[in-house]
Length: 314
Image 1 (cartoon, rainbow, N blue to C red):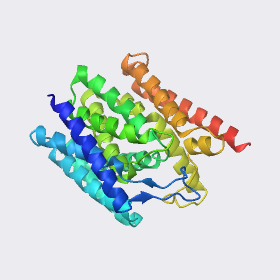
Image 2 (image 1 turned 90 degrees about the vertical axis):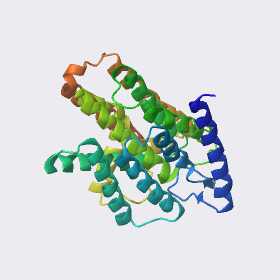
Image 3 (image 1 turned 30 degrees about the vertical axis):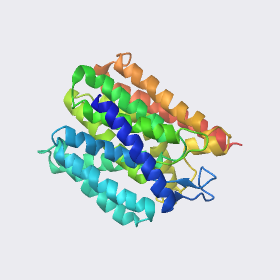
């Protein structure tokens, strides 16, 4: 039997066991006036994401040890936060430590100046991915698109061990079955969204370093624009950016326009898939990376504001 099929079954069994334990120990996401869901739902189902990485770590002969240490640390702290909310300062401190570990894995000789820039980008990426985990199917479907794209690119470039993408993909498929529903059986929780975000950022940086093409940053453009502009606008209004809210475009489309969670999740994922297709098949020319970064980012911001303003006029 294939190691991938065995791993898929193991991850499914682990998640089923976790669901039973979570129900017993009441590890729930309880809705409030700012939530996008209305029923009590199990939190932390994304625990299968870091577990899939630990399975990879064992079978790979302990590849990428600093990165895996970062995954272990952020998964433990995030799971604790899922059970009982931790102070923002504690979460931020842990995230900085984890990102530094990943930096040492990626750039062992990077200067202090550039290290600070990458640190800032990775911290922003981590929290952006976490902020976008707010409706059924969003994290799972979007991550499926990103990881599948990276796997396809890796087939020709081989910038990373393929199993580092395959094992997490299996965990996303398992989680998708329980989360991509009108009434989700479980939510990812911080343990899932942050560990998955760290993996995707690690893979993207590996790809950009290997090819020297910053254009691949566009593989996350949809999340980047929604979370980035929402964060900036909330900060300008003097709001606490760490508190739950309904300011993201995807949240407003659900709450103001009444679109279903799954339709919005699919829309975000499909738009990102189209952009990825354009990049992979060179319809957006790799050699003009900076130009296309600016053009597509500006276009995404324009469309974001156009839709957001139309919602606010209601």
